[in-house]
Length: 81
Image 1 (cartoon, rainbow, N blue to C red):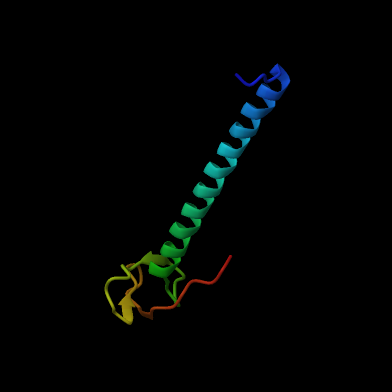
Image 2 (cartoon, rainbow, N blue to C red):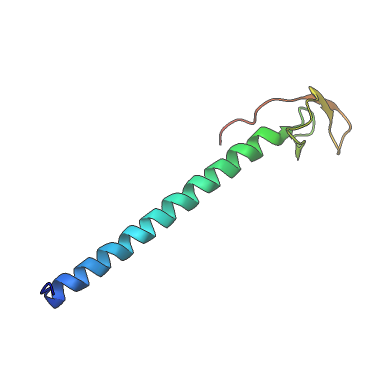
């Protein structure tokens, strides 16, 4: 049996806990970034009324119709905030 002092055992479990929290945080941050990139890829902003609406990326339509003002809009990436 390996003798481990109580203080060393507490520090070990705290280090494991902090590492687990950091890994979970990084994973959720990465997933949210992927979702935001997808949202920006399918979003289209109307050039007349400014309404942002989604059009699936699977459809290869270059020009879409705004659901509010019925203006044709080209597919462009949304600008970074």
